[in-house]
Image (cartoon, rainbow, N blue to C red; front, side, top):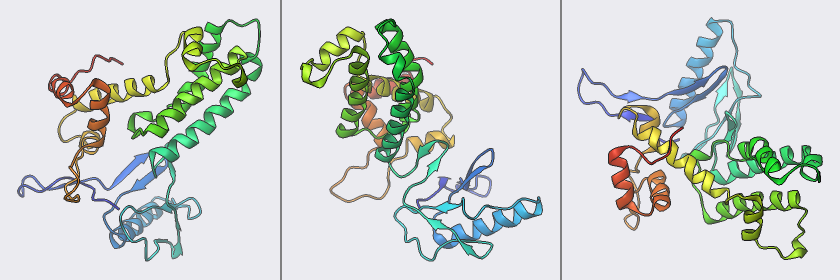
Length: 264
């Protein structure tokens, strides 16, 4: 488990700020820096829930560690809870961007095939099909993509999903040897990775306009303090966005103005 300190203590008047939990409705994610501290916080949470007539569901409770020994196993009400290497929280997989994309892609294909009769219909125009596709499938695929760390393999998978769906709409088979550029021209579309980059830049713009002590800003712009001598400490989100806008010089200028040309 990684450290969850937002701001170190400067004095008695300015104590350290620590993020211990993330709450949304009845879903709670507890954060701690070690297994013993996690067990203590889990015990306190269970006791507080009982005082309100609530209980923690042991079968639905899981824990995951990052750069930390998962032993001894955490317990609730004396029962051990399941240790996992990945889990879903608010619709996204927490383990890695790759695992999240794999799940989003499966859900997007499921949504696509539910409307197969529309995609193959000869009476519906291509423009209408593309609009339906963007509304029903792309939104499912790119949910939470603002926080993805995009690799070349992920970029290819995202674009391949789009071109495969467009080919089905146009009734173009792989054996027809029609290039992706031709498919984009017929459908009047661009690679889906462009939408991902646009969303990430828009998200970074929101982050940069936040107050310095906002948890979202501090975590999104976090730069590792401990790293190997052969590595350079860099913020992953800034590196990805720098590649999109054309380098760190352009990104530094945009960062100063807190504006990337994208508005929500």
